[in-house]
Length: 440
Image (cartoon, rainbow, N blue to C red; front, side, top):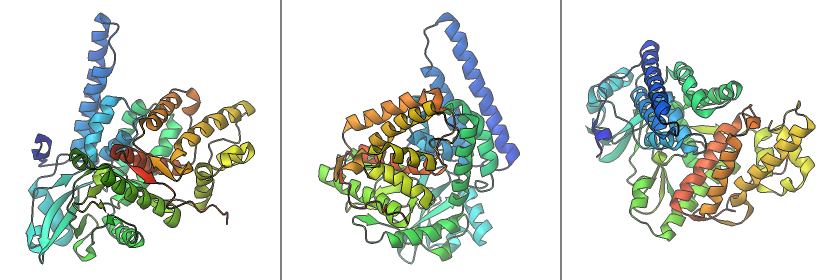
């Protein structure tokens, strides 16, 4: 167990004043890092920003880890999009995909007494006060009841009540890191806030978990926990324990290509079944939400973040990625207008520019959908994606808000899926669940 995992928080800032003070302190630290960097640059004009990025990433992540909640969740989301941040931030923020410093035993007991009026030892036959996994919104403890091994997820104190204020506090950091226009950042933050409010409602998560695991029950090589609503509350979830390894641990065992493909296929089917059959998707595809069982199956252990896709988004989006619509310029521009990628006030030159760039972007993104098999171990595909993302991120034309809000989580979902499949180096059959594109 790492030193990070052994450090426990005996307290956590929960009030707006306490959390704001922590952000202000971090702001001063970041400001000090800039002063230090530019002082050194006076004597060494060739000095790059790598050490500055490293220092800032360390200070910001330390602050977010202490605060947990929506601020840390935003860091986790940003770390999954490798085009948005310098490497130092991606490396540091990626830690939140697997663990963050856990809360101490007394704080856990306090949470149980608040929601059940009892300590965990009075509810379960056995309860381990040391968490097995700690992330951005909550942490997981192992328990036992009537001979069954259970996973108990406990939300950090104050997380659900501090989302709006936390996002206002994290906005200046995000503004500086992302280089988005203020309008675009506001759209991003509003959509993130909406999803996070849902994600902190554990009663909603239990209902969705039961609903989605039932709907996906016939998919091959996938397992879900059983949920126990009577042992759950607004801030606590009890489910059956799934034995297995996280992706990083699994890959360290040097699994066979056959097993990588099996897990990759299960992941592909899980996501595309939801997108095309349920029109709602598990929108948090970071590695910490999955387990690979000893039997070689994919365990899905978190349904906190669900993104629903309305028809006026679903049809034009998947028509672009899954048909030959891009060959018809007029129809493509029509779809781009529906998705607000091209605006009504755009000049003919702007229309031509965005048509060309978005067509190139979608042609690249849609490659896995354009054949019946795809090898996600192919580095050239990901190099092309990354290089195109780098190119676009430097263009002033993309500093303004473009695209409907649904892109934020749908893109995050699909690129997250691609990245995990790339880590697996999986070859998958991509025509198992196809879009339904007959317009109603």
